[in-house]
Length: 67
Image (cartoon, rainbow, N blue to C red; front, side, top):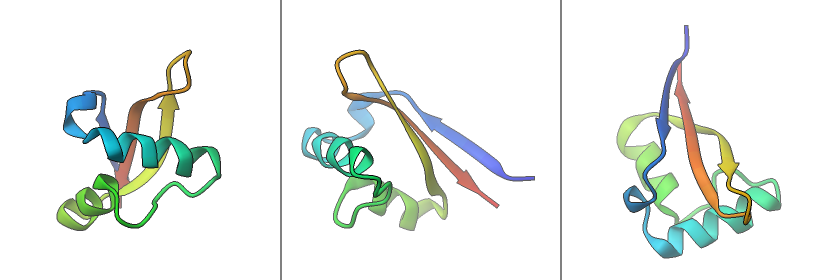
């Protein structure tokens, strides 16, 4: 069974990471190099599964899975 973690707090990601994530997610690259997500994945062993956006198109929720 895969483990899942959901990050909903934008403050857990730096502002520049949020912008990079939005751009990468819109272009289909869910795990861009050099972002907080890449660092988080390396640190925890999780992989980014999906990104949820608010009505203004800003990343709101990051779903990570492992296993």
